[in-house]
Length: 249
Ligand SMILES: *[C@@H]1O[C@H](CO)[C@@H](O)[C@H](O)[C@H]1NC(C)=O
Ligand SMILES: *[C@@H]1O[C@H](CO)[C@@H](O)[C@H](O)[C@H]1NC(C)=O
Image 1: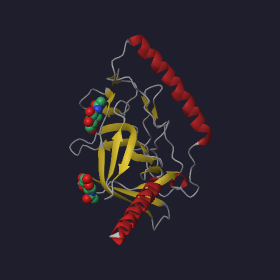
Image 2: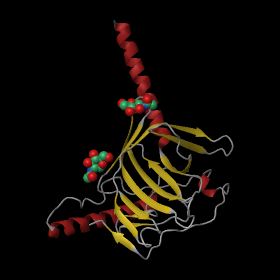
Image 3: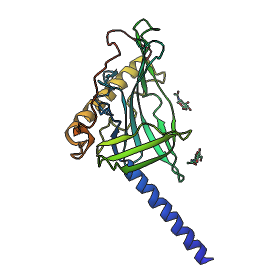
């Protein structure tokens, strides 16, 4: 009996250590091979409500050691029938993540903070739509390993159906992220006076926090992908900035 209990205790410990290891291995900012999309203030400016289009499509995820994530997505889907009519979307989300014992990774966003900029040039008359975005994401499992060929840390995440995402490479550790707290608590219907006031003070908080972060935070890995010229791409730039409909109040 005693032995059974201690075996259980050891198994529990092993599971916890494995889980901590998994969490440690995620720590940092990861970016796909276009090497142009990074989480953080250069992708989404919560003070000005601005999503900034990277020069190339790609994805980036950041993870802290204490359970927070941030994601930056810039996807362009070609239209095989009409190459002149691609669909482009930019998505920002952040919130909390959780790794289950079986390795499944769940990202639960702060619902009011997510943003999407969608451009369908042939259907929207060139007017992009800027709106809220709130999508819980489940990844069946993930793997962090050193890429044999390039010698950089590689993160491979698998979607809920088991299919692989495009691999990402370690860019910053500590990660480059916006503050890991709710940035835009404006969805609730408060009176407009108190609302604008609290929003203002929050904005100054965010601004200060960003300034502080700028001084101390993200560390570009010297061995990282950011410096590498392994992949060469031509710039695109598909989302017109001039015309945007705002659906965010
Ligand atoms: C882990 O468990 C969750 C439910 O608790 C399930 O949805 C998920 O598919 C499981 N992951 C794997 C890799 O089996
Ligand atoms: C955000 O999405 C989750 C599920 O993905 C849902 O349960 C929740 O109600 C949504 N919140 C808002 C404010 O839309």
